[in-house]
Image (cartoon, rainbow, N blue to C red; front, side, top):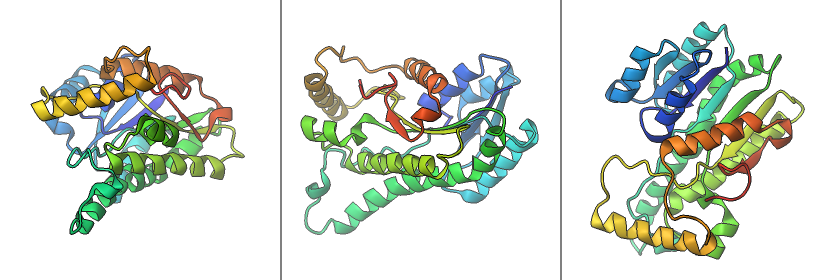
Length: 273
């Protein structure tokens, strides 16, 4: 019975992972969230599907992660097949600022913005991976274990320069660092052909819980217009969370040891939209 841990599973892409993975009763699915009791849909899945297990924990809280890993091991016999590092911080405050967009006197604000993103999107993923890695390594003795860390096409330096993409700089920079973290794990375990580390972009996904404000809508229009210049054949319509997860699960299924350390899109290549 394949086992999965998905972080940030209370909403959006994480919840879609839980929903789709748990459709197969042979899968054992663990939903890790800061406050699983606060997600009605996650609670309903837990009640209606016996293969869904809820885990409470923030990915920056090592003690909570260790408790979650212990619970997973007690259910699976000390093993884990898949870890999906989905939890992330996307701070939309000052989203339009490039690194030099902070004015004089905002140096501490700049540091705070970037450090908050790094704490969750880089350090949090490292803590999560390190905590669950012993379970994944036990699985990899007999089959291929996969650690999937969700990244973003905004972390692609080439696209950033060509498209003049300055939005969400702390998020983009931290995700670029995450891609290197994935590569470092892959390098450290390169001799083990039964474990794969992958950075995977979900594409442009609509995960909004409410309609955008006029200002947010204007920013969305600008972003879409920018992307259309680079991808003229793109429809301009963001994916739903379920569409994105469906594509990503296909990629996750197909990747092998030859792909370890790669940074891929939801199409399994470098096409970000």
